[in-house]
Length: 328
Image (tube, rainbow, N blue to C red; front, side, top):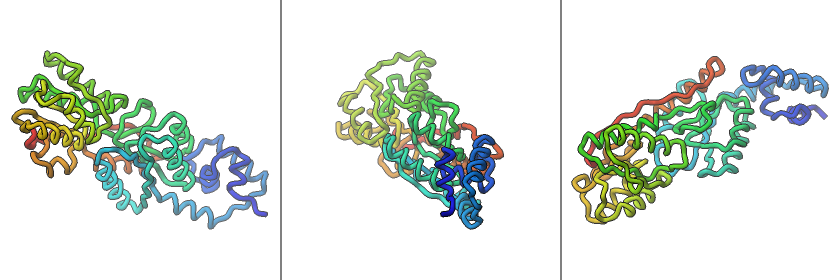
């Protein structure tokens, strides 16, 4: 029976995808030590190179895998649009896999699926891997980039907005509009993203000599329901005169609950959102927002993958801007 790539992988203690890359000469994706081990094992087992199989692997290497977390916000489609546009310009194909919502098992399954396909690169949209899955990704020797997330492990490359500055500039904007009692709602305060935005909020308040009240900060998971719950905590006669909601959906939740209480937006309560998706323009009143460049995140993520291995992946911030509408 002919020796297969799986036979070599099992004997050498590496993945079949790694064996495929070594045997097809994709030198950027593995170490010299790994290459020597694979080639030695192949020779020992009497492996005969299958040219057709190598060509198949090469063709598949024109595939970019996008792993998407099932977030409770609505920005992912813009990132994927950016990825698709850039992929099309380079004659690359895109496959999309969903990794659930903070589900390590689904994340691992998605990673294993794309690693076995021998893809050209992996883009992870708002996916926060645990240490075990991080190691699986890093050791796969496939170019990768995280998008729209700031990671605790700063050695991993990510492209996102500067979340500290988002929190700071949103707060400063409301202060400049005359507000001094400002709520901060619906962010996941256990995440790096949420904590950085909260830090920016705190710093802007302190820089302007304003007192903080812990009751003005309401955590959550960036969801619509978290905005509703935050507004319920502020109450029918809120002490705060303005609220920064950590996503467009959360802002709509704040606004709807406030209006249910009979409050007028922005006369009684100003509401500002973070993300700036099309939702901001279709609700009434339209939402003033910190608008992130999600499409650009997708484009730049693809560019990083395409430029590798000639360039090492780096973390970077995309710009954001505040767009004034009707809610402040």
